[in-house]
Every structure is written in C-alpha cells, then in structure tokens.
Image 1: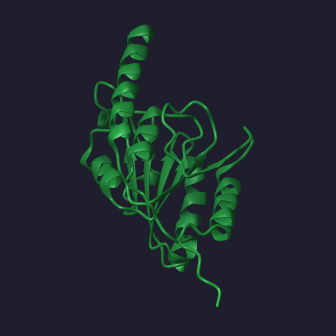
Image 2: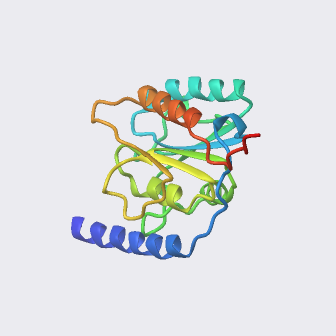
Length: 189
C-alpha cells in the first residue's frame, strides 16, 4: 500500500513540476511597508501553533495588511479551535484529489489570488502545501530552505533548525522583509 501511495505522490509531483514550469507571475515591487495583502501557508498538524498565528494576524492588521491563511490538517477531523475563522482556510484529506493535490475551491482561490507576499510555514514538507506555495500567484514568496521541495518557488529562503518554532521563524521573516526592498531604488539627487 505504501508503494502505491508513493506512486500517486510522485505523479502529483510530476504534475506540479509541469504546471510550475509554465507558470508566470508578476513580481512584487516594494517591501513589507508597502504590502497590502499577505498569505500564509501553514502545516496545521500542531494546532497549538494557531495562537501564534492569531497574534501574527493581529500584528499584520495593525500594519494594514490583509492576511489570509491556508492550512492543511492531516487528520480526518479538524480541531474546533481552528474552524470558523474567516481569515483561515483549513484543508483536510477529503479536500485532496487522487494525486494528493488540493482540489477544493478555497485552495484554487488562494492560489489565484495575487498576494503581495506569501510566507510558507510548511515545516513537515507536506505535498499539498508545497503545491499551493509553488503555484501561488504571490508577488514575493518566502519559505524554508530545504532540498525536499521538487520546485524552488521562493524568492527568499530562511534556514531553520529542527527546534525553531513558528513564532521565531515569523519574527525572522518580518525582520528580513523590513530590511529588503524589492522595488526600484530611488535616484539620489
């Protein structure tokens, strides 16, 4: 059974590589100060991390950034604390197709939305989240540095240790996003 699952996953990755190769997206010109929309791709296998994401959402609201979160929960029943949140979409196993690709309308909408910045929080290398991050129409993508993704969708990669928690990771991402400017530099007069 595991061999058949591996075959299906490899087929899903082949489909992703083909779609990723044809993908074109507009790059975001600016930094976090000029961003208006942001997306997070989150591995919800540790629901306790939601409190960190809730605080992060509040910080982004204070910056006038509309934050949307899409997550994948590998279990059959999504924990109550992460349901019915308007800025969070949680995918389950039933939302994946035969090749483990997200097939829900919410996932398609998230992928097509032209976000300014996308932050990938896929610490466990879940393929459905890799699929969303890779095909997202976001203008600037930040992700975890690893060699496990079969595509390299990120404009900025952060190296993390196994002990890094989401709060530290998000703090570092925001720190570096404040430092960089992806836009054209102003001419000095």
